[in-house]
Image (tube, rainbow, N blue to C red; front, top):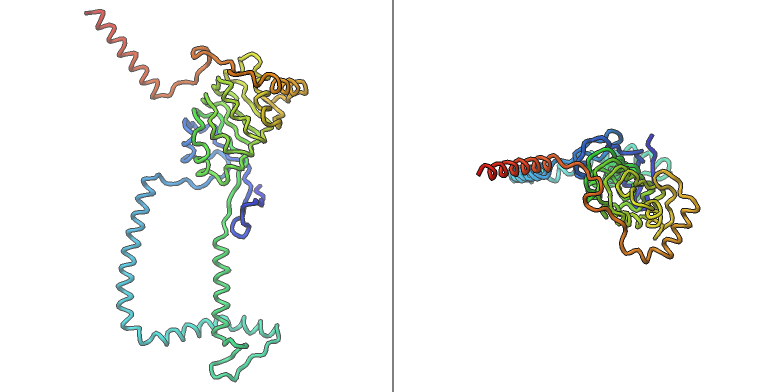
Length: 338
């Protein structure tokens, strides 16, 4: 069920905002965040999928050429008509205004009757109301009605999504996530729930900071192996629930205290880490960590390059690696024979 929302920066006369529960792109076999541009969600409504840049450019060129040809044809027709219709221009205008007057006459007379405004019939140019004749009144009424219709046409309906599910894909980087989501959804900066669990992320890109209203962020089941990556999340001022379990950093001794200390270094909104409520004792330890130790920690503990679990290779990388191994083996065999 969609509900209407009011946003501070949105004019309700121009836009109607409907809250859309969630956009679900989980299990969509995405390897790159930009794959979202061409994907249909499993649930929820996204913006219409755009044509590729080349197709769009080609369509624009074709449309522009057709417009120019049409303008030329219209110009020729107008030049031909001008000579024939010049003499009848005055008559045509009179007929047009008379038609407008007849169209709006019932409405005008009804308003006059309700407002007790006398109709002056003794004018040689026809009935009048004050300083305006019926034609002028009708034209004014028509302009008002057309303006009203135009305003109604301009009002657009937009859906605001607060929850985005990108879990269980093969996304390796969050770089470019915000401009991509601008193509997929309205007002991505208003996102509150983002699920990136069970992907192939090794780093937390700073693009995540473009979602200042995030309250729930799931990053569990990835391949993040450096605690310094979590420091970027400390700049999110509204995060209440964060998950990072199932990443290599979970194996670092004191992992939980490190994460709570990092997240509490600027804001103290975090209430749950890895779906477990942060206790008062942990809160106090994080305070001590920040007050007494944080300034002295120049380098966080890290894994050696061969000591942490890495994401599976891309198919093209695997093929390249297999080819290199085959070349190496053939060279070794050739050298042995020589």
